[in-house]
Length: 252
Image 1 (cartoon, rainbow, N blue to C red):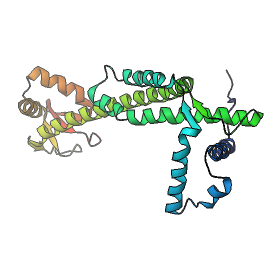
Image 2: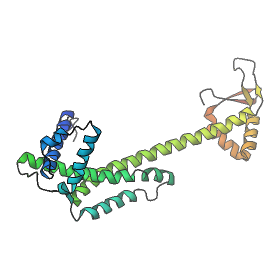
Image 3: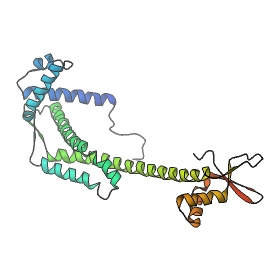
């Protein structure tokens, strides 16, 4: 705290080495749980479609010997998924549809991350010497709970970002709709050249307000209220006390 130095931050090299270690760990476990040896695996070229398929077949065939879920895994998974769905409760329908579209991936990431937590534990055990590659690896409810805590925070932040993005989009859309309505009213009115440095493109203010009210089917008090809301988009001037308006060049 109160320091600009981040603690326990892994470098890119550290992360790269972690995944190299995990790869060798999983391969060692695969060989111990299947009928192949390291030479047979190495002889299968992953760049050749048929040999890559053979590798995948070997992994699928040995998967249940390599991994097993404990009895508390399924209940923990149900609770985690329910927690994610609870975030959608009371949400705007449009946002809710967007958020729910992520749920299949979230469920998949729960399993992937829980499994990776097992790999981290086994990698630490191998480093300490207390490890047998032939032992089955168990994925527990605790692993899933830890994965859920990580993903829940990310998912919640995603929802907050989406809400802000949609609100911003809605605000922009509303502003565009207002601008369009006023420009349609302007286009329907006669334009004037004021004959001096102010140039042309001016409209009688009363004509614009009247036309806007007619096109939008609004009473005069409401028209004035709408005008006040977008007044900054207009330029105003007077000629002999008569008000004129022109749509601002930087208001599009």
